[in-house]
Image (cartoon, rainbow, N blue to C red; front, side, top):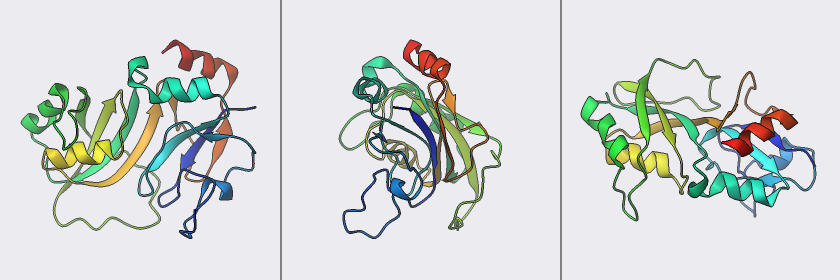
Length: 186
């Protein structure tokens, strides 16, 4: 069974069923049976999602003890200060936990494909690149909020050595065997 690299669009569930919500699902994009998301992206997040039938791979990508880095581009409201970015390196304290130390840096506009619903900021915005090794529910959004920079748009651009490359929202491709080997070595 292949492992699939998918560019999940905005407002698409990371499941194959909508459970009565009427939302778009992976079923509309992925015609391959018996593959499942190895990790999640929330409904409002976009970007790289891996689909596989390999439970060991799913565990490797999901469990922080394996240190598989995930890279996100976050458009935030506000202007990040060096002090705010330094908090990421220490580990941001959130409601339920303290996030592991993460890398965060200011990023020039990454020139991503337009989102299906435009962003309407209420002031200046900036882009951050955030690299972390865990992935709790809404973690990046919670982290940026905690440092006073609410997330307006969130796109996962890499999982370990795998990147979106030239894929556009809604497109997918099979992960090559050599790419999978690199993912297991990370």
